[in-house]
Image (cartoon, rainbow, N blue to C red):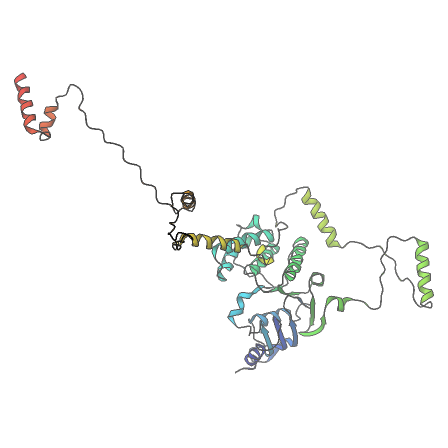
Length: 427
């Protein structure tokens, strides 16, 4: 048994997090089995349930390699990794994971809707659930208008959008997003960040890997920064980003005399060692300016041929199960289809005589007949009677005895013969 296999089995029984990595190492070798690159080296971290976890680092820092080991696509050279308390190669945990790879590996000859249909069938979703989720996801990522276009005609940003939709089709407990905002415009980037925050609030566990620090800062609860396959820092955003050498005071606009007085007071209290180092006015971010311009353009109803801004988060990702009402209706229909058991006949309290059940011909019976007709369970209507066959009447002026003789005689052959004899005598 190899060392990596031993690590997987041991990792399946340690830790209580959704993902537990202990001394994880991955070394790529060349054809002669010589060490070619050490992608990950002695990496240890844990992802807690209901947490948005950030995996940060520059290109080539080992982020994608770590994700592939968590998914079981790569075996670690050494160390331990467990997902949901089991080895990553355990097939049972796959249906609880949603994965968006760094590159969108999609079938170009399928359109957007067929792509989601394909992935929904892989997770064995029933037809009704699959169709409802596809409609909601297409609306969420803004591709409803382009759902019937082949994926090969999509832009890179549109392919990332449909890739995010396929990662959510199975309503995963653990969502892995590897560079999810690559190729997206600022509108899509903002939407994906809002989606990640919403999923975290709804109790999903999310692993977000990116080298775009601004995208991660607004979303994650805790993060790890990698460099050269090694962990360089770990903690919450507040712990890692808070500066302990500066103090920021924000007020309404102050005049020069007030600023000078504040500076004099600070220098007086600090013994002349510190004072006001910089005075500036707050400004909005470029992202806020961009989104504001786009919102104004939409208010003017300007058209666009690309992806739209998208709709609301699907209900099934919000832990709201609309199937519950449908399941109740199905159960009621099945109960009405089943033969009813005869209820015991109650006895009169005083006389002891048996009380007969009400006839179906009453009001209750009429209601049952109406319900049966509405549900399509009523008896089939009898076909209308055929129209009466009209007896043949010969045209006026035609001797019917001749026709009767040709047909072999009427109902009374003797009478017919006498009638034909009389006719001959008249002739």
